[in-house]
Length: 302
Image (cartoon, rainbow, N blue to C red; front, side, top):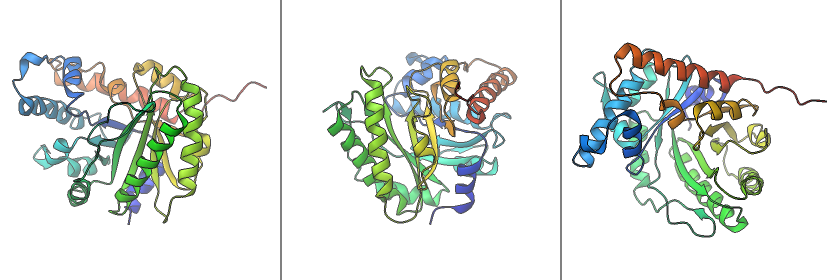
């Protein structure tokens, strides 16, 4: 049974979801952007300790509360860690922020225009631990590099198959078939993806809901049918390589879609900032992303 109180917040809350789930492959880049170079750590354990410290600084900042941040997506090591002497998911809940967990194990090599998720034989055990720690939902990412009908169908099929496994644990899956903004036929890929997602949602068994995390579309409001679908709790958008300014501008053009940004949220934060400067900078980013997430698109010209 999906958590009804948390689901109501996800579905109806006014805010956005912070993506704090950089994994092994993306962590060095995240630390570098934060002002910590590779010479600051000698191994993966030290690297993950540094990024955990960065994440704790974010989620314990005065500006990071449920007033504007609906949820936060965590990396597994962050879920298992502590902040202010409390398990991270517990602290987030106390601050009104719904905790999510990244559960995929990375991507396969590109084939047929897409990158499927790698096998994840330990998923059920991870989901069991997540439930015990108070996690409400999960996130898993695939990538679409070109408008391949068979490739995109395979991505959606895999995502929903794993999504049903996640829902069986009472968690809400965030299904993320990212369309690369560098795809040469991006608009066509988005059209194919929309059709595949609608079909998968229509065929979804049971009565649980999913969330969708999608690249901001080339055509504004392309994903409106997904926003309105009865099996969708929320449609969120990834920043996908856009700057925060670009991502917020594109987001505000799409009715009912809220942000789930990572780089665009963190791009101005630096390790050497004072706590006051850090919170002020984070608060400004939160305000900007929140405003774009709750904005109503201007009506089309007659």
